[in-house]
Image 1 (cartoon, rainbow, N blue to C red):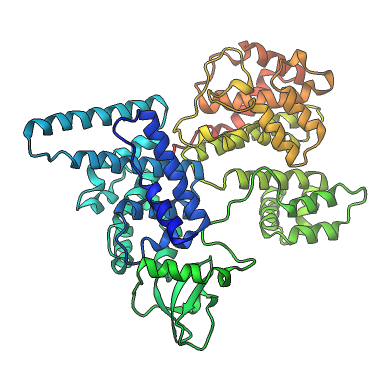
Image 2 (image 1 turned 90 degrees about the vertical axis):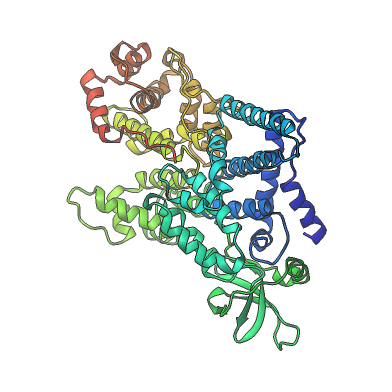
Length: 553
């Protein structure tokens, strides 16, 4: 990206809508600008970070927005959610600029301007409430403190949520000179309440190592940091040095004094070293996002091994050992699940504890949940709790009745049925799951949310991509039908998933029905599964301690 392109991108990010624009058009402009900030950070993280470290005369709102983007990505914020947070921050600056433009020298004009600005602010707030964009309103509430000279004191407030705290913290840090930001970050960290200290750990890398544009020493040779990865930095040495510019371990970089070059000089170095900076492998600076639509390749190799007629246990264990996350998960759960609570010390013991039939479903469910929950958004804990409770209900129901499901396969199929909770963009920016008031229960219509495809079609497509059997995909396809309309070969499996999902919705997200047994569909499901009312009571009681949803972050 050349200097002209970078400057153009900067200008677009902080471009403001005209006063005559409608409120929905303004929101659209801010969202597009926020998307550009995210794209810049994803494509050229060093450039985005250099705005806050190099000497420059760039607008303060640009430095704030790009630092907020970096803070959000380091904390694994979902990109769609982070886009809205950035856009709301741009709106915050727009409203502040309107307030600061009142000084016309004529009192009457000032009054008219204030009235107009107040009206614009009220119109925007009403629009955001109507659209359910509470995350925007949270950021706009910072207007009174964000631009105050004493804004750091607000960091100590327990009322701020995670997004508000990151927005305010990035504003404070970006407003200080680069040389002072290390000490300022330490001071701010002491003000932040304990329950949000986890926000700080990922950010420490920005203040503990040399950043783009910083003058450093590498093996005693003066250099400038031009690019960064997770554990490596690209150091551009001075032309008089007898060594080439190259990637070096960040631990070998020394910064006796924090000094920074001009932004224009940084961009010149960035362009000059473009070819030299190309490198295969290496961990990017911002956390890697793993695709949800396809399973990890290591998991496919394990599934292939499990599908063989004669499973080679040593070969299977070797493949699981190659993925530490799978290894640790199975050893940990096997130690907890065996009857005598004996510690399991190796993967072979874990495989023998569960048996090869369960191992595949357990690993798929573990990998799927890891990927579905890898990024943060306000309702991620609520969605995770719903999925885990619904899966536990389905697993317990399957264990009490004779179906094609094992307890583990029922839990896995339910996890796919709940997966749209984590993939639909509309659920990334709201603070409460919108339950549809519908007397006739349907998984597709449980949540009042716009979807490109029916809920279960999205779930079924994901199950297909994750190499699930045709039988389990057929169950998902049939689950939006009444049980009497389902083929007899799948009626019981249909009842397991439908009943489990309904129990989770009823007992976790809404007040329980006074008489559950009077619900028509429930009578049919329990009849098909030969479950008594006491069985249902036992199933619910087993999950009683989990029937509380976490508050939005």
